[in-house]
Length: 317
Image (cartoon, rainbow, N blue to C red):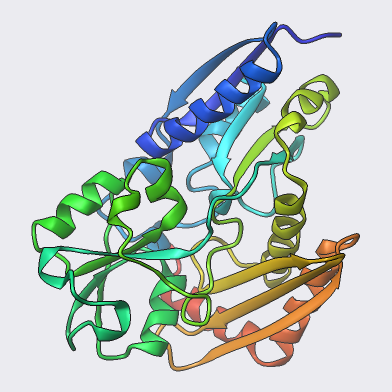
């Protein structure tokens, strides 16, 4: 049966609404006869701002409330930053579409007094704000003389904290800064040799109910195939390592001709141990590449590192 209405579930944060509005406008452009509405809400991750993300759990921290709306029939789709979407979805829901990726790199943002510095020239003891264990572990490994401090809140709140002097610099996703119009605050794009990005970073994932082919057909008009292949490989690696979004697992992926190249990293929280490897294979089976890389990392001790991290940052009951 043709669909004439589409309801989108979204977080109500500024970045989430910018992303959802883009999806809404693109779908309206491609399907002008479709009436599209947005249902915005706060998720658990939006409400708890005084505790480090890793301490309050990571499975669906920014997605559960949106998924509930679909499962009870109040929304047909949900728009997520793909890096926030767990690799194992609730029964009945599927990842229906992955959009074209913005630059997935991490970015250095500085305040005025550090404007002349790059990451590698920051003075000893400089305070770096990040809420990501992945960034924390990799930067501690490379720059042990820096001081790392947790930072929460939306992008604007974090920038205000930086500019007020609470931090010397922040590490944020370049894609989020770009989507919010803060490209001018990107002081340095951090190369993958220093910091591999989060699984799915820079891409949007559109989740939907699995038994609605008419919905799937509509949202797949926004699919970007190269991004989808890369993200399937990345998510397969994460799934195989059984890591949530708040563990130090980093990736980088690229497609050359008909070959997909996937780099992966697992690190200890203190940065002392860092395992990194690469696998490549046909774009026809991206998830196999992720599994093979996960197994290679496990052979080098990744499981032991992740187990120790889980014991250290286990969510409080």
